[in-house]
Image (cartoon, rainbow, N blue to C red):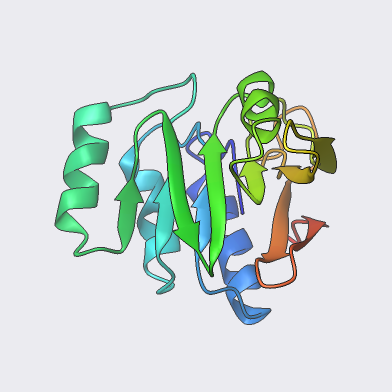
Length: 166
């Protein structure tokens, strides 16, 4: 999982390549992609990319067109995504405060967010008496913080922050 690539296609592709080499089967991008061309090198690596936008919207019409023309390689959800992956209920949004709110509902096994550029894997109590994982991969572009991403396993709900090896 990645976030806040801010048009840094080189670092984004490097993170996706490392994740693929470690066995990743999909990429989740929690926003601030900026332009759809940022995704080209990452998409060329063969993993499907699920993406939401952030507060740096870039060119939304081109992003929608890129997803449409990708033959299913890029799933672009707009502001947030509620989906099932690997048999898990997943929610993805850019903003941490909204992610925390969604995690407390208990409707999801894991909630992913970005925006803060601070990588973290946390657990939040939910209203159903359970606990929900809340994961922020930080900034893959390394803006104001180390370049990071998260490698995760949905089957056992384990997630680890990784520093990007440039």
